[in-house]
Image (cartoon, rainbow, N blue to C red):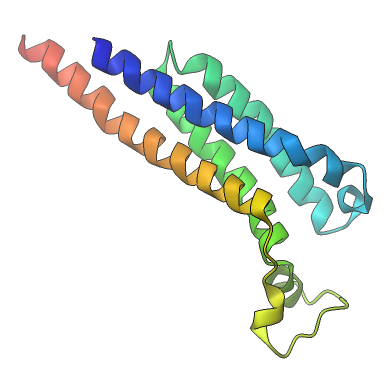
Length: 148
């Protein structure tokens, strides 16, 4: 049982890391024109909603691990487009045919290094791996109870 408690703590810490990385810089984007854009506004709202889902998953991890993993995966899918836009705004502007100051001829100009966004994507990857892994661990936990 201690093994499963340790894995629950890892999954909860992944949710906490996603919340921390998101909340550190999300207010900076919300206080600017980013929140009111026709493309960036919905991305901001999705990231804001995902922070609440990460918080719910953090609490539920210790009680309902599989449901918490599902909520975490939903939060990851809502938050990932926001981080992708911060890192690669040119790709979004090219896909949605928006007006921009960036040249559209070379894809190299579309990528901007942002350490915060890279840490956010790494935390999302960490949470995704642990959430997907929890599905198999919950199955193994149930299977071991039935056979004993």
